[in-house]
Image 1 (cartoon, rainbow, N blue to C red):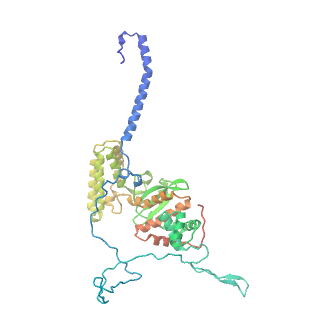
Image 2 (cartoon, rainbow, N blue to C red; image 1 turned 135 degrees about the horizontal axis):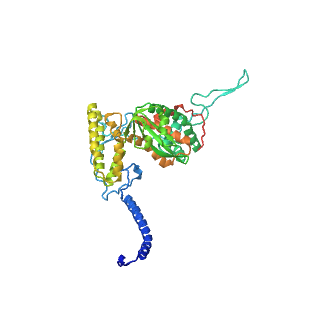
Image 3 (tube, rainbow, N blue to C red; image 1 turned 90 degrees about the horizontal axis):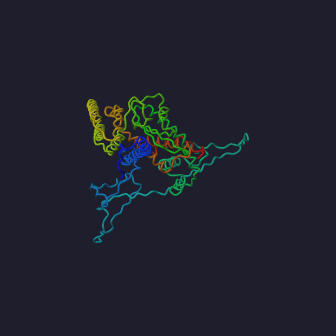
Length: 460
């Protein structure tokens, strides 16, 4: 323990010497205090709750699933059983009748027997390619001496041996089911008995670029002419670089485009001078300013509010989450409410928001959320009085989900033409789903303009 120093007994020279000896300690103390502040800030960050798919925009694949309890899942509530509906037009009917009673062995006449049980047995017939051999006859003209050959029938022109049905199936299996070239070659051989090379598959996909691009251009024309558009984007790898897949969703069509930029220039290039009525998206900067009104995605805000609650704010954030849930519940009942009632609900939500913004907050996450809401409060409840506007941007996220799975399975595209073809394909498929049509039928229709005899080779 350091003894007390009687400063009154020290001379001026001794006091100066003592001060000079303490100066290095002052510097060490300042450095220690700075280090302590840095460690306290790091500790505060470590003590913050982790961001999960439930309280942030992390995708579900990034979340940690909880362990299943030891007892397993609780028994499912019972419900009436449902049998498969019988095929209305079976290919054949097999009747089994009794010849004798199984109990007493007495002969059983045919007349009294009635069906006691009826069921279907379904099988797939053997699949094999349907091959049409085309022979073009001709020879030398007996009159002029010139050689001539008969023209090929329509749809049977020389070139690639694979017809439109095979092209549609290859495009569908590769892009919709994320089946790689080698596995697709094996599948076509083992399931359909068709010998096809990986180069032929690549050529089929390359030929599909033009008709799918034309179909996507028609969809783009409908999207840019729409009044309400929901949009989102996700990353994708193209030729070893990070690009971005954008999706634009309307009530009747869905457009996918893959571009090297995540900026607003993608939207401006697509829509040009067209000004939409309402834009629905998250709060990312490049998604703003493209329409007269903007509807913020309430699902994203609900997760942000939950994160602020997890950080310890049980005032503003909890009340704001309850307000958003109330607004979503009102939106679900819009079809049963009158316009005047919706206007009253909108005014009531604004008044409630005023009270929520005045509530105390706890933590940096709550402060950030409060500043965002105070700045963008006019974009929260657009959907309440506009029946064509959804409350969330989930429709865009659902449209991008197959692309995320395709990215994880294939790790992206080796060429730009492959990315463009895939984006056009997803536009056709997503639009078919949005209109409850058969995906494969719409794909065959889009590929109808493909000339199967034209051989196109693109760099891999």
